[in-house]
Image (cartoon, rainbow, N blue to C red; front, side, top):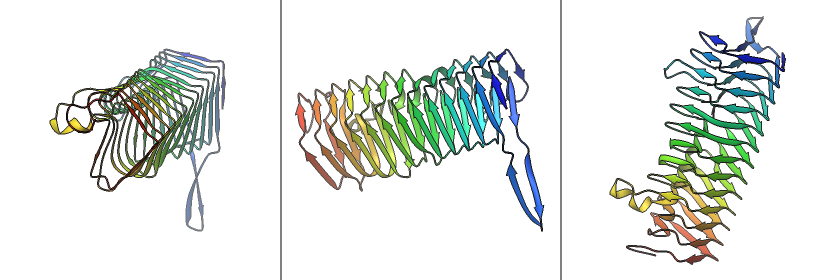
Length: 365
């Protein structure tokens, strides 16, 4: 199926896919009482299309595609599409993709789309391989999770040179990842995203997350994780060469809040500058006011990174089974809290570190 240079404007659907819905039939075979099901081998190619102000009542404001082999979307614009029903299972403000082996989105704009539950711009379910390149997700909104895009039960996600500036009331203002996915994000920009938790990215029950040479600027979390909240990660989380600047959380983790990471967290060659965490309402959260807050992680390593002018502390780790390795760190003028707080930590190693102009009102400046 090839769609090229088509405009879909103000189309409406009473169910899903305001402009277009593509569903393939499943072919059933019965051979000697052995039943099997094969998905039709259909590919969909959408190029240089514009989808504006389309609406659906239940799912996928513009396009819904299910159970095809390959989808390519290139040089296409999704603008002001909406799912209008206000219930818990609505998803995909512009696009819903389910059960696809390979999805490629290149040089595509997803702007000002809206849905209630999940995936303000795009919702992806049960996809094997997803690649986004030079995509822009701007001003999309959702009442629950995944302001720009939401991934559920996908296997591999690769995002390159893309931009995210979106809103989710609960989780993942820019992106929501959940259940089983391995993620690599490179050379991408997250700016002015908002969510209650995980302003730019929220991950839950994923395999691993690699963030390479990304910029996070002025993202705001209503509670935890100014750029990232991660929980129940099966393997590891790695930040390499990222710039994390002027992000805000009101409680835990001006930049990062991580909980239940089974393997390790590695922070290497990053810049953390002027990130801020507000005064927590609960007194027992005071020592957790830090740029990075980690709970229940097997190993935490911070190498060759700069922490400059962050309010609150720099690093707060609290767990009975965590080993800490800090090497070649430069920390300067980081608020009035203790620069680094360790609670119930079994091993700490500090190598070649510089601590300059730090302040503390109680213990351990």
